[in-house]
Amino acid sequence: MAEDDKPKGEPTGNDDSAADELKDESTSADEAAADEAETDEAETAADEGADEDSGEEKPAAKPSIKIKAPAAGAAKLPQAKNIRSPEFTPHGISAGRGSGPRPSALTAAQAKKRRQATFLAVAIGLVAIAGATAFYVTRPGPEIKVTGTLGTAPKVDIPKDMVPDNKFKVTEAITGSGPKLANGDIAYVKFAFYQWSKKGTGNKAESTNKKLNSSYEQQGGQQVMPMTVGNTQVKGLDKGLAGHPSGSRLVLQLPPVDGFGEQGSQMGLTNKDSVVFVVDIMAAIPKNAEAKGTEKKLDDKNLPKVEPGQPGKGPKVTVPKADAPDKLEVRTLIEGSGPALAKGDNAVVQYVGKLWRDGKTFDESWSKGQPASFPIGTGGTVPGFDKGLTGAKVGSRVLLILPPKEGYGTKGNEQAGIKGTDTLVFVVDILGTVPK
Picture 1: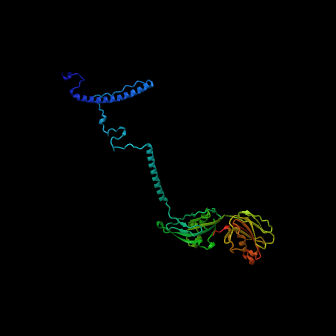
Picture 2: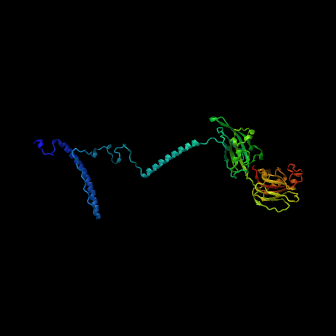
Picture 3: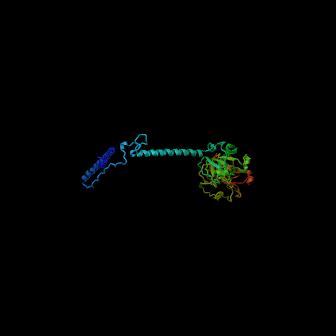
């Protein structure tokens, strides 16, 4: 039979191998579809069994879909067994070791703790770096060092590499516990001060210093000096003392504008020199301080009448028209609660003195701007003062009547207008004692 006479649709000899390959591929596809269908049937059967147990009717299962063999000439589907790992990696898991990151074995809690620890370590590192940078930028430079206890001569070290910067500065080397000073208060201080000069320019600049004066080196009772805050004649001292408590040791750096001014030349200071003061505030008396305590009535008409006066002006004293007493009279008008004065004390007082014969004032301290101080029991003042004030308490107001022998004696005091026959009347407020 001629080839043209063969039935159409029968494969020729050349088509046998292609048909076999197509048959094999169709068989593989059929097997895969059959496996999938069996799985679907098993699941459907399980569902139907469950439905039968529950007694509920369920919709009929959809027929499984079979995969048909591809037509001749269609693209071939690769078989899973022939696919290599670089081409196909199920679920993103590496098919070969070392080809990618391995899944972590940490739990979520462990991973969270690890992230927190990492963040904390980074934060601590940043803080440490910032702290080191801040210290480098703001690290302290040289400073004046003052050591020693309050009331004793201080040891003062002014570094050569610390030059004056023409700025006012005050620091407390020792902080006291007493009342803070205000303008008008009397501060009893010990002090030392130093000339502080700049030498050279630029990076080669340094400083020199020289002690000019020190009250610590004076004799005995001359070591403590009274200063009226706001009226010391040294601008820097007035600024530096105000606001600091009694019992403090202050270190003051005074630029030329706050120093001694024109008077500085008498001490060897130039108009470019700064001054360093060390000041110990040993005690303080408030402005307008007066006796404070328990009032004692005085009803003797033959003795002077003492009435309160205006603040800061002292009491009003009226001498009677009567004969003066011929012996020492001591009357406590206000009894304070402070310590009693003893021999050797240097009493800080405000007072007024009058003549018995005409009631005129011959001396007083109230208008002088600061209290007076008198030694007690050492003969440093008139006898009646020593006798009348010894044992009196700080805070008291005392009336003293001194006949001539307890005052200036028969010679009197011509400069003060006191005759040798004059009886003296004093009213004394005891405010405190000068520290030793």
